[in-house]
Structures are given as C-alpha cells and as structure tokens.
Image (cartoon, rainbow, N blue to C red):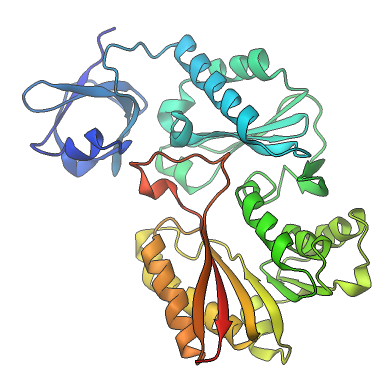
Length: 393
C-alpha cells in the first residue's frame, strides 16, 4: 500500500534507528500534501531511505511509529497480530491469583495511544491518539473476537486526548456494567471503581512494588501517604506490619480503603485511615515510622511543571525522612513523565540529606512486567521507584 511520505531532516533518523517510537515536529523537513492528523504515513530520510510507518499528528509528537517495516499494511490483521502478541506476553508473566492487569500498554505493545486494562471479566480501554481513534470500531471488534469480554468499558478522556483534537468518550460499550468490580491481585482482594477511579480504577502498575512492601513490612509501623484505595496498606498489613496508617485527601477513596482492609481479613482498628493532606499530616505528626510509602499523583504533567514538581517531591520526601526510624525504609515513587530517573534520584537524595540523614539504595523499581517499555523509549518508563534505607550520618 502506498502511504504518503514525511521526510526527516539530516541525521534526525538516528533516534528512530535506535528504537525510539516518537518523531518530534522539529525533526521534519517536509510533509507531503494532504496529510492530516490520524493518517498512517511513511517516514523517510532526505535521501529516500524508508524508516517505517506511523501515525501522523499535527503536534509536538508528529509521528508515533507503528512498525519499521515500510512494506507493511496497517489493516485489521495488523492490529489482530499486535493484540495477540500482547495477550501471549501476559499469559507468560502474570503471577498466580491475579485477574487484574494491563493487557495493552500503548507504545510498549506497538499500539500507540491504546491502553487496555483487565479487571476480572471486565475490560477497560482508553484511546488517546487521533491515529488510534480511526481504528476504534476495528479494535472493539477485535476485543470481542480475541478477549470475549462479558463487559467492555471505555474511558477515553484527558489532556492527551484533547491535544489530539478528540473529545472525551466514556461509558459502557458491551454489557450492563456496574461501576464497581471485585478483583484479585496476588491472592488479595480489592474493590475497583472503573467508572470514576483514577486511571482506569486501580494502580495496576504498582503490583510488583506492592509485593516488595509485603516482604519488608513484618513487624513494622507503616505510613502510607497518598494511599488512594489502600492497596499498599493491605499488602503491608498482610505482610505482618503491626500497624498501618493510610492517609489520603479523598474521602471516597478512603472509604474504599476501609473496605479493602476488611475484605482481606484485617482489623480496621489496627490500621486507621485518615482523611488529610499528606504534606500537612507529615508536618504535624510526631510519630516515627519504620516504613513510609510515598506514591503521590504526577506533580509534573508538562515540562512547564517540572520546577514546581521538584519542590513538591523534595518537600514530601524531606518530611518523610524526618519521620523514619533509624534503619527504617522510605519507599518513594514518581509517576511524572517529565521527571526522569536521574532527577528523581537526586531529589530523594537531597531531601534525605536535608533531613540530616543518609540514604542507602535497596531497590530501584518501575512499573510491573505487564507494562512493557521499548528499550529505546526512556519516556515510557514514567513510573520510578526508590526503596532506600534511612540512617544517621
């Protein structure tokens, strides 16, 4: 099939050859007439060498590559193969006792702009790019063929979609879906609100980090900040923590946390849930904890937010470090795409030093294996995690 061409400036093909799936607008030398956002285009060098096919968009990310095979045809069978590859991968990597996971992780599965999460017999999908929006009907048909969902729910919304010129699309596609779904993760039970919860209802990307928390919590006094619906808290308590305090500013999320604590056979009195701003709570508390978990929302949603985000990450980690016992552990996370791993490490280090303490790295983590990322796509590693031991100088 003959796709219209986009030509790159000299030497701008190097990131593509190294596996980066994005081509930025500043790298473009020319655009063939008639190309509009959402079209599949053929990317070439100035001397006519074909680099692959991708979705075009009239924005900062001008092309999202689909394949390096310029002879490929982007059709229903192309997407069926990609979906089957994603299904096959999850079948190999998922732990037992788990029926909630990411099934399609956008660029990480060769389907830029598409997220599919499974919650038991309910599948939630989100389309974020104009290119993938063109294939919405095909994708739904493939979901039915390959996944045979009892329920299919769409949550195509947010700033990324707006930047692509797309309006929000939210609601049931297949089935009469209750907004609340019960799931299992590593044998533990959780309630998920797929209709109005953050992301698609649950932080599936933190599953492997929650397993670490379960391993290191025995006998510990634990503080879980930005606890959302309490998944880290449940893992810590099941892991043998003597007491877990969950803090979040959302009353609705805190009610679900209480339910999740009870449904896993834990005593609510031993694991209190507090509605508070986490910054304020840490500044006011006099408690000293053996383990503090920080999993805040993205403080930097764009590059212009980075300076403010650095201050926020530094302050919350400083306050946490001040309230950790000798030899205790800080588990700190950032899901801000624009705060890279090196910057995040520097922020946590500076905060611990400001608290008059020393940090030793125990684990450097990211999202779970069901969130694959291309080796040439560092921006895909949006979730950064540091587990550090805190001691006096």
